[in-house]
Image (cartoon, rainbow, N blue to C red; front, side, top):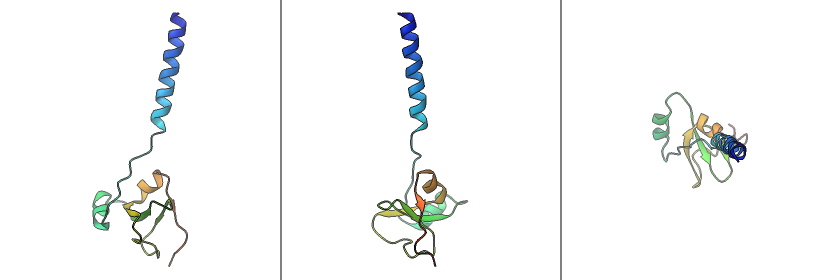
Length: 90
């Protein structure tokens, strides 16, 4: 009985540790570009389109366009799984 408890405890600890690593990083979207720049002064600000799952750099045609998006730090967008848009480059 003690061996079963030990195996169950080890399995529970292992699953708990694995689940902690799978947690997504927090993303902080802002309504205004200046707010995002104050949040991440050493990083560039991008426009994140939540529906498409892409982010746009300043100078791209879809930067700051649409109602389903916000300004975020580029590193936060990358770490949260969003990809850079290759369309609309000027």
